[in-house]
Length: 147
Image (cartoon, rainbow, N blue to C red; front, side, top):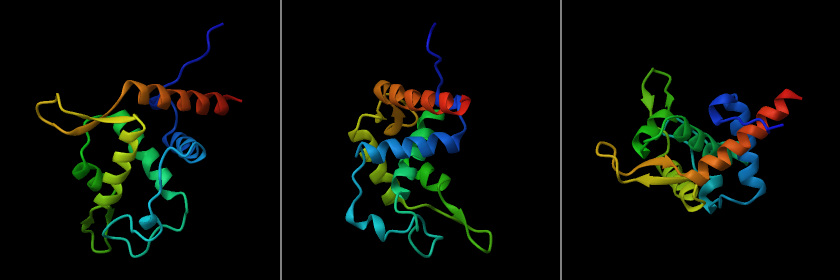
């Protein structure tokens, strides 16, 4: 009997992001910089996140977002990961954090820059190896949810 196969789109986002963040942390795929404990996640925030593993979670969320809809750049991602201020004004997310995590995901061959696209040159897309890794984690999440 064939093993069931699931993609990232087939599993709930929260479950996948949590599982992929644990995978990144357990296998030391992402290197956390020294400034990671003191940096804010955006302009609208006052302090850094309380969770020590927030960078792994953000990297997993970035990988999932680019998997689901490719051709994202840093500018669009800072808007997506931003927040709304008290007066209703939108505040951007931290571009340095997003840029750093995209570079880390490129280093482990999950993402790559797309230079073939005419309209979005330099945007990020998922590599074949990255797609296989992400789908493998999604399959593990889906099979665990079935039990």
